[in-house]
Length: 111
Image (cartoon, rainbow, N blue to C red; front, side):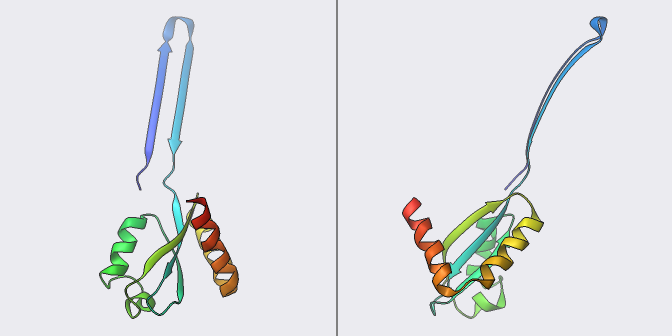
């Protein structure tokens, strides 16, 4: 994911008037879950989900997923910062399997 920045600035020195508008969309982080070939669930975070999924599939991702390929993306959630992503990842990892399956089911229902 990339950073998008837009800047509009107009200055009129005579009137000493300046109008500035800055809009910046920060790159978001993604918390995601994969269902591995043995049925287990893997939770991770990344700034570039497509790149990370490709790393997993090529065997260059986590050791856990590497030994349980193929893996399928079953859930994802965008968050605004790396700190929030790590916190959310930790929260999800503490949940029971049933709670994680419920998150996945709700994701499917939204699609």
